[in-house]
Structures are given as structure tokens and as C-alpha cells.
Length: 496
View 1 (tube, rainbow, N blue to C red):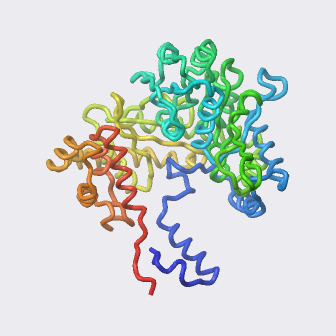
View 2 (cartoon, rainbow, N blue to C red; view 1 turned 30 degrees about the vertical axis):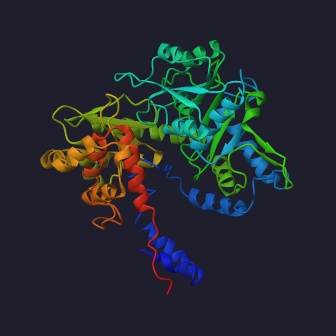
View 3 (tube, helix red, strand yellow; view 1 turned 135 degrees about the vertical axis):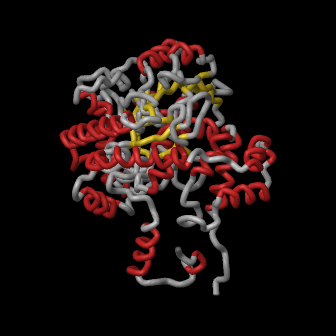
């Protein structure tokens, strides 16, 4: 740990500062090695880290605020937009030859901008709304919250994990400015019925956005490898915009995403311009004004280095890894796949009499596998999410035995039982009833911030996840805000 009160007063040598960063990084999850199934995307390509670091360094101080001052950044952005467009069915010789786009900082910014653009295209609508399936990424809810747009959520089938196109169509109102779907949904990795949803949106005269942030750079390559990928890109009539993250399966460093529009007219409301002040005239295609050129240069170098043939090879390696992990899940009694994999996700849950999933996640962590637990929601069971990358392929043979061993250990340990007083408290609590004293008491009971584990978190998170799982979503949100707020506090002390 570092002394937070000594960061500013005393300067240190460069090698000391770098050593401190490396020391802090030692406590992080491993970003390479194929054992982290969320948050990072590793192609296991030798030399790629060094290339992207060098490219980032070349453009780190370039400012995207003014493309006329730094034409190199404009050229790289246009090249990335063109590459994303070609991957997603646009460009010369297609039915979408005039696709334009912008480079953003990530999928959340791309989705916020897609909603903002649709909203601003209809200034006559005083109370705009968007229609999304319940499996849509939470960033749509964030966009609705930030932009004061109403969110109409259509449930997904507990069997297919997809929305009913007829239900999506029925949810469209005169105030609807955007209909959204996923390719694939992050939680379960299934592709929504994009063609049917886009057709319904087009018939109603409403834009349709495809959130392909997660799978947009892999699904086209999987299709080329013979996988039965349903239509989802600009070849689908009615699709007006698509988002795809380059820091996911294009394997660029974070954070770079691309938001594409079918034509420039559709994109026009995305811009913000302001000249009614004495300073420079502001014109921004994205949310940020000042933007470092480092991530964009790193993404450009990544795409140029890997190339189309490289991405096809990585998609094949990842496809095989997905198949191997899915077989490992099928081979263990007490587990079942939430859906047959059709992208780069393996998602599984427990069967009746199977292990407590949150205990299982802890057991996998103890064996060096870092997975992502997903809480139960609206009739969908809790599940375990595995984001699979090319780096996972060499580890697949190890995962099966470890999974079986972890399930046996979780069954032997039994399910987590919340203390009676905790269960009663959560059952009676409302978000409004939370007080600072209650939050501190809950945090202490859960081992948060107590130093009982690595840093401020307990070594095992099953108790925390179990408490969150029994709470309704509104209380989950408030609890998480409060818990994370406790973690994100500097340890103030004397400057002496």
C-alpha cells in the first residue's frame, strides 16, 4: 500500500514512482495468461503490448479537441471508422456505402451518444423514450438517466434469453426515438432478433441501434468461419447505427470504441457546437472535448498489425476455446449452460441440488480462475459469466478439472446462509431507509473495508454476493453505491 498523504508533498525519482506503480499493480487481477474471464481482452500475441505502448507514447500528448491542429489523429480516427464499417457490412459495394462514425472512449460513451443523437434528432418530442430489452447493457439505463430519456424495458424469454420482436414493436410509442438490441447481449452472449426488431422500428419511423460493443468485431469473423451468425449489421434494413468496442475483440488497449451511423444525416445531431462565448468555438463529435491521441494511436497500430487475417485466426482460436469451456461445463453434474454459446461467452448456472454459485466463484478464484458472478434477475437465475479470449485457449484443458474440483468443494461447503439479522434487515430495507450507520454496519458484517482480505475486500465474496442477490435491484444499486463510496475515500492524515 502507499501513503496517500505523501503523494503530493514530496517528489521522488522517476524510478521510485514507477516502482510504486508496479508494486500497486501486483495486487491486481492478471491481465494476461488466460485466467481472467472479464474486464480485459488478451489475444496472447507476442510483441503487441510493446507495439501499442510505443504507439500510445507517440500520440499521448496529441489533443483530439482540434483535428485541424493534429491531422494525424483525424487520419487515424477515419481509418478506424472505415475498418469498423467494413467489418460491419458497410463501405463501397454494400447496401450501406455512406456509413460515417466517431471514435469514443468506450462502449458506454458510444451508447450514450447513440441515445443523445436519436433524442436530439427530434426536438419536437418533449418527453422522448427509448425501447430496450431487459438484457440490454446497463449503459442504456445510464444514458437514459443522464439525458432524461424514459426507458421502456421489454422482458426477455427465460428460455431463449432474447426479447420477443412483437413485444418490442408493441412497446414503441409516438414519443419513442430509438429502439435498441444487442449482438450479442453481454450477460448471456446471445444475439437478439435484430432483423425483426429493426423492421419494426423502421415501420414506425424510429431509429434502431445495434449494441455490438461486445461482439461486433468477432461475429463477422465467426460467420466467415462457418458459424451460423444471424444477421445483425448494416446489411440489415432498418439498422441505423452500430457501436463496436475496439478495446474488446479488436484487442486494442482501453479505451477505444467506434459509433457508426448509416449516413452523415443520421449522425449530425451527435455533434455539440457552441459559439456564444468569447473563447474558441467548441465543436465536439463526442462527449469529451480534450482527448488524448494515445488510445487512438494504440488502436490504429493494433488493427494495422493484426490485420484481417490475424483477426480471422484469433476468432478461430477463440471459437475453439469457447467450445472447450462449454464442454467442461456440460461434463460437471450440477451445472448447466444458460444458452448454447454463439459468440465468445460461456454462461452457466446451477441445477437443482447443484452448488451455490457464489461459493463456486470463490472456489474458482482460489484456484486462480477469475470469473464474473451475475445476480438473479426477473426470473432469471444467478449465473457465472466467462468472457473468452484467444489467450484462454492454452488454458482450456486445465479449466475442466479445476471446475469439477471447485464444484465438489462448493457442494461440500454448502450454500451461504445470511445471518438471520442480516436477512431480516435486507428484507425490510428500502433504499431511502439506508443511513450512514446502517451502511457501516452492513459493510463491517460483510468484511468490506476491514482489511480481512486483499486490500479493503474480503478474500471470499460469496456473502457479499448473496446479500446483494436477495435484495431487489433498487436496493442493490443503493448498497453498491454506498459500499463503493466507502472504498473510494483517501486515508486523510497529517502532511507532516
